Image (cartoon, rainbow, N blue to C red; front, side):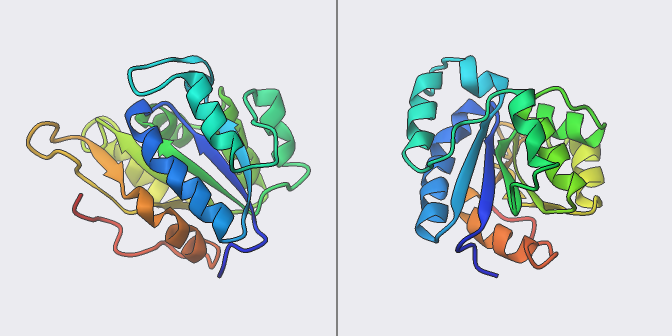
Length: 194
């Protein structure tokens, strides 16, 4: 199923070293005809890091959307009752977000957006980027893989020898993951070499 005409929430969480990889994917979705609704985690909205300032990321995302950036829980809540989104992408999706989602915690704009979209039984796509994906967060990723309407962008170990527990999604597969998820399926293969 094509994304042309689809309303896609694009939530960015604080894996700051990965944010640069997802901006071209937002552009790709827009070029494919999607309308982007940006959502930022508190960390991305307010933290400057060696990978870029909060303002840099906000300006980068504003280039590809006509919608205002959602940066509060209150701002994300209407996604549910108003049925705003066809699909929601969380990229990068930190281990912190994975853990909270797996345990039903809704204390950030991104988690509220996820909860709101799941309420409408619409797909949520997670593009994990976490240093503990094969350790503390392995159980949470496993739980989410078995949760209705949650789909994963294919992922793999980004540095098996230097960071053996780290997992990062192949961000170039976001569009294809959305297309398959809109049909209610998980894109395969899920595990890829990075």
